[in-house]
Image 1 (cartoon, helix red, strand yellow):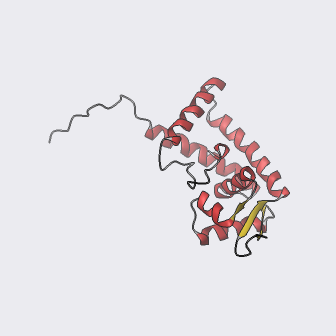
Image 2: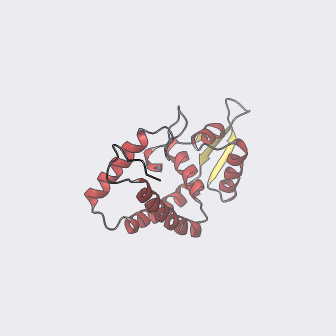
Image 3: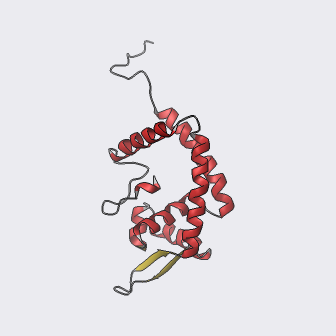
Length: 163
């Protein structure tokens, strides 16, 4: 059986390397978040709440691409630890407004500090300029894809700090 020739393919493919780097980053990130009682989805929700100054429950579910049941469970976790607070909207009692608490803001700051250390560890072989270049390239790549890790709802994009 003869193989088909590969036409117009660059000599290097990035997918496997990005997956490997992502896996290393994710495993290390999970290991520093766990002692803080956080999971990656908690971190994303807290970051969105901070960067957007709060959100309706429905908008947060849309931004995080979660269904109603999943977002309720996530918010239950955050409220149980006093990291976020849900309350009825004064304008529309059918809606819930979700806001980051002071405890949540402090926990998020600790998590971001720990994650900066993870990034320093995983990307240790890159100097500052190379890291900035990598960040710019990743921003460019995710901005041009419909299904990006940082894609949010059409009207409420996930802030760059989440990416």
